[in-house]
Length: 382
Image (cartoon, rainbow, N blue to C red; front, side):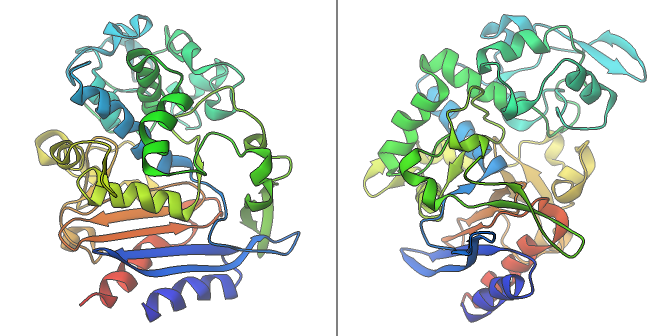
C-alpha cells in the first residue's frame, strides 16, 4: 500500500487537498486506514480517522439500497409507474427543442433508480433545469419538505422521454420519497432503522449532532492558487436539522461508517452476521441496466466524470464494464460512485476489494484522483 499512501499524501503536501482519509480492505483485512492533513485549515485541526464528511452523491447508493429492501418485501415492482405512489407525476410533458409534447411512456420506479426518468438536474444549464430553478427547486438547500417535491415538479416538463437518456438529476430525491411513502417512515428514520443502526453506522445522517461538531470537516473550493472555504463546519447547514432530506446528496458520514456499508455490499448484503439485503439483490443492483448494454458515453446527457466509455449503470451504482475501454485499471464488475467534494468508493467482487476515499474539495472533477487511486490500489494487489 506504499504507493497508495504516497499518492494521497502527495496531494495534501502539494496543497491540492486539505486532508484525506483513505481506506483499503482486501478480503477480511483492512490493509490501509490512513488519515492525513487537516480537516479544518483555518483552525489548524488535524484530519482524524473519525472525521465527519459531506458525502454528497455517495448518498445515492445508500438510499437506492433502502428502496430495494422494500422491493424484496414485495411492496412494489420496478416497472410500476411512479404515479402509482406519487400521483402528481403522471405522464408529464417532454421538452423537445423548445416545444412540449406527450412522453412516450410514464416514468417507472426503475427509471428513478437508473437516472433514466427524464427528470433534469436542478443546478444544470439545460432549459428544463432553468425552469426548475425558476420554480425554486434548490435540492437539499430547500426549506420545503421532501413530500412537496412531486407537487413542485408537476407541470414542469421532462428533459427527455423516460428510458431514453441517462440524466444525472433529481431522480434519487424521489427514490428517497418512495422510501417514505412505501416504507411508512420519514427518510431519516427509515434509513436509521433499516440500514444505519443494523450496520453500526453511528455517524451517518442528514445533519451533524452538536456533540459531534468538533469532528466535522470544513469544505473547500480551490481558486487563485489556494483553498477557499465554502462551508464552515460551525455555520454549515449540516450543523442543524435539515428540512429537505435529499436522497441525491444529503448525507454526512465517516470513513468507518462508509466502509461498513461497502463491506456489507461486498459481503453480499451481510456484515458481522447481520443481513441488510439479499445477495441476489446486490448483484442485480450492481449489474449494468442501461438499454442494450450501452455504456454511459453512449446514453448520458451529463459530462464530466460520469460520462465514461466502458462504464455502465445499475440501480444506484456505476459499473465498470470494460477496463480497456474505460482506460482505467480495474476488474469488470467493479461498482462505484463518488461525491462532488471529491469523495469516492469502489467495490470489486472478483478481487474481494473495498476502497473508500474521503476529502472535502469541490468540484470533484478538478483532479483525477479516482483514476489514480485505482491504479495505485490495484497495483498493490498480488
